[in-house]
Image (cartoon, rainbow, N blue to C red; front, side, top):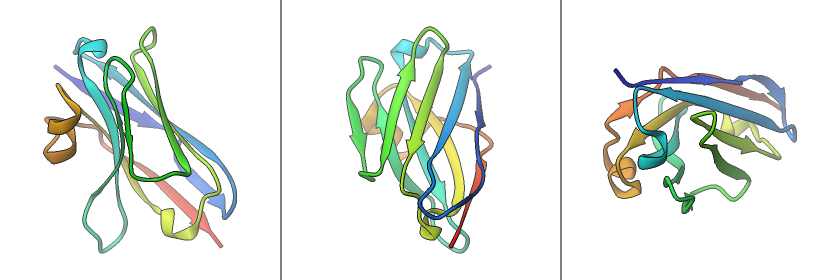
Length: 118
């Protein structure tokens, strides 16, 4: 079965950088779009960024960079200049296209907490 396992979350200070990783298994990584969502306390889950198997990127946050390593079946989210409002649970997601991924991803990871203190 498909598994998405996030890592790299933690407690950081405002202005710091953090890199999240999501290791995927059970799917042909290069044939899927991978992405990141986040959900802050009391708010709806929101789209952060997505990348297709051939490297086309869609991003909703200019301070964040999404990338993939096909050899490691891993997608990354590099976050810079973090702000307290970036505090959220960050989820990795996968689907066969960026369009489907943005609307209702088929596969989700369990999430990793990112907390940014002021």
